Image (cartoon, rainbow, N blue to C red):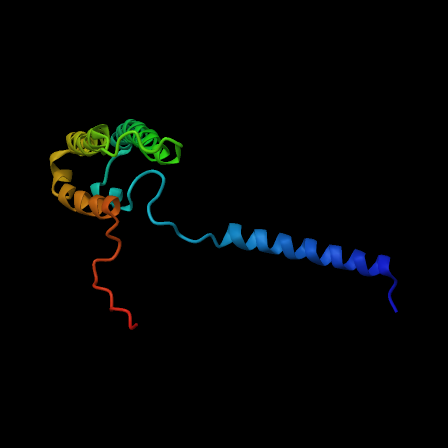
Length: 155
């Protein structure tokens, strides 16, 4: 029979090897994520050169700042709005904060202006693919991953 020390030693080595194998598996076979951090997958449609791509990346970063700022403001506003419910004296006002809609408008207008700036980067021969880029980008923004109808679930 095997003594306890030898058993624990082999078990520890086995678990270490198993952990390393799992890590190697995850690094080598990473699942594909929808959308690259550089932008939507449809970006290749525009066939931008390096200068255009660099300018595009700058526009993307500016757009992310606008979106992040508006999202943060909305989160703060909603936190204040819903935290009224936890106060012992009850809600101060049940009215929906109008500023929330203003921040949402900032996001929509900011995205529209972003698309206009992207279009201005394109050369005339690239303009033909811009509507496809817009359609695919909007599908990603609005969450339309699959346009096929889903089969209804049986209850």
